Image (cartoon, rainbow, N blue to C red; front, side, top):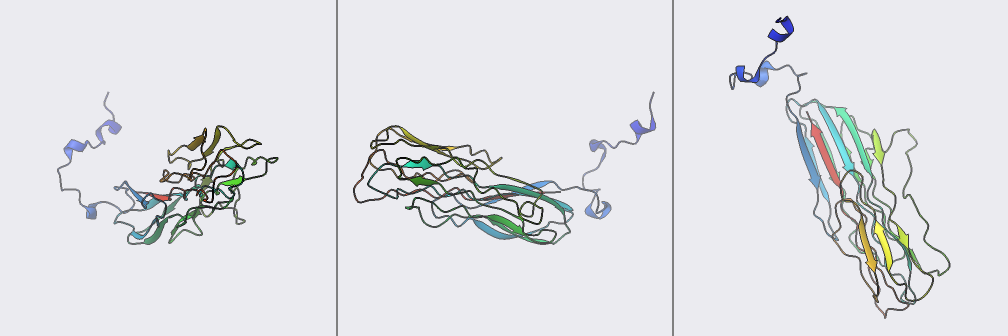
Length: 264
């Protein structure tokens, strides 16, 4: 038997195109759902992407998702012996949903990377992505921890979660939910000719970049390869021999950051 509920539904085909204008829709009715991405180029010296974004007409809610840049890969800090390696960490993730009004403006910055490759044992951490504007406070996603190596034949690199910290205000870098990956894996041996050395840099959460792995069977010196995927940790320089001449291998820069906006 038919009911009132079955009669009061409006079928899409019954609405004539152009008859429902913006002026006939209440401001509380969500009629927009769009996604916009911000990111720079991939490369060893990319500056990322920073711009000003304006809330479109009729939009009342916005979800920001941020990924920081990956840490740099370590350099070959000594030519006198082989190393133990720890891969770089991918950038952190952070998200926040807020209420907005037409015409509000937000400064969007998807992190770039450090403009130089690493030659030291301890590489630079990745840069932060951030968004500034109304209803946001100190909202960012920090970059990943840089890779490291050591030349001590009696000490392995330690497993490390990376930059695990929460700001003292109780929120997580101004957002609602933030997380990072474990720093990259580590490997090494205790003698010259470190056969089949491996290292693995981690990717960024939910960005689908996975891991950036590297393995050497025999090689005097190898620089890290680039570009790596967005938000991923950079590759480190590697060698499997004691000594490598006068040149030092260089670690690559991490993958640049990303900002995603979903608005409705």
